[in-house]
Image 1 (cartoon, protein in one colour):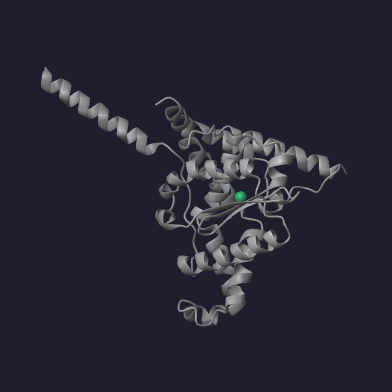
Image 2 (cartoon, protein in one colour):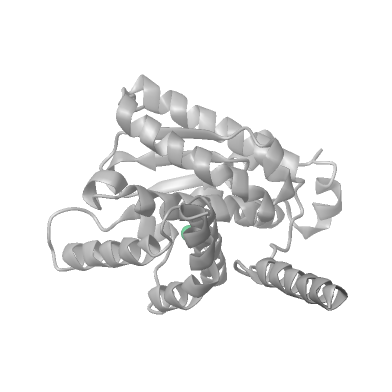
Length: 272
Ligand SMILES: [Zn+2]
């Protein structure tokens, strides 16, 4: 009897751990990663530092302690879970800054360089959970190396396939070209598949950090509301965020369909 009980306990424990392993979202790895991750991260870091210096010189690097600490606290909650999607993330020198700008925008460059614009927080009146899902989405792009794929693509386009082999040594690639590619990595729209995957990573990071992943639905509702207002000739620009993260009709539906995969993680974190 006792043995039977032990066996049953073992079976149910392994079924439970299997179920736990199945929890979370499924995403695709990037292809066409011609440029080494270290090169991409170094170049992105230089671009990020230049951008922050330029913002500081113009007095636009926001030092509002409460707002900055709010962003950095959310990042500290999300980051420990990032290795589930990219093991190298453990070595990243993460940075979070706030830029004073009406632009409704946020990004995370390769290597974990995050920036939020005051415009996205103020215009959309973001809650902490909503910030967590946006930041998680941006971190998702970096973890899935969408920027690295884009930079590789750009460099290939510019130096030509014939010297692609040489690119592995990077002797042929000028710093300028890399810088250009790094800029494009955050200023061009992502593909739909990349957007969906970044959404999923964002949901899971937020949920594991104890932020309600359902906030992602609210974010996209607010975002499309804002786009509708500006399309009707209302005040303000269309959100910059939408030009780099094209919304599609099914986005909210896809997020909602994936919530059951991450809500248990959120509930467990909230009520351990
Ligand atoms: Zn995106």
